[in-house]
Image (cartoon, rainbow, N blue to C red):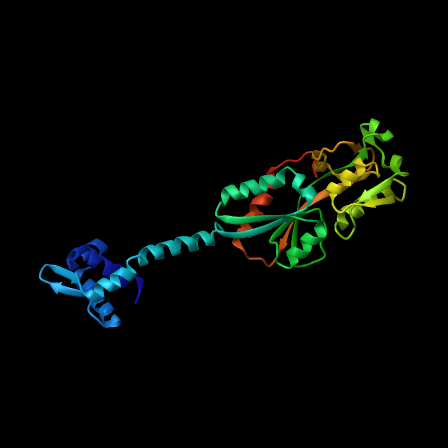
Length: 303
């Protein structure tokens, strides 16, 4: 039994006449009659009474009609659903991001643009640190992640650096160096450096420590902060200073100031990472729209 048999049966049932049904569906009356006979043979019982002026459903035909009446509509719905899925217009995508990535003005814009373009795709968002994001990506618990990790030692992960920009110094508001528009890192050699643990954000940690060494001193490691937001709070408590990506200046906290770096400025990069073997069309759409947005999006002095 094929879907066309159902369509032919429903046409005859609706018209009550083989000739009119044949004209409606665009085939000859003899071939239509043969198709109905083939269907009746397969089912094993008559579906129509042939009467002088047309055809009437038998009891078996009426029972069959009750079940198959929705088949053509269901088939059309199934075709539309398959086509939408094939274009990546349905499905799910799980995206992770670091706290600092959330402050990059383009990242929320990417989420907003994708939701508008693909409203039927269920997108879930998760904030975490770089190390956890990479782990969850490798374990297929996330599909794509935004993170400040410019080197991931895994051939199975594809990485695109989508923006870059300077880091800035964050100081207690009462620090003597806060009086200047720009601060040389060498001025802070006697202050404690507040960072997140290296194992949760190795790229950021290494760049900040290297910046201090390039400025001529070995940093005095101070309080360890669980995340970059906590770094700002610890600086506000006058526990030391730190370097953060410039978008973090949007996080305004009492007792801190942000200053540009006088001298060699470390660069923070924001990357999009995803598994290279992931064939999800929804993911492909997300990646292509993200990369296109960042090619056209200018972030002056942005990270």
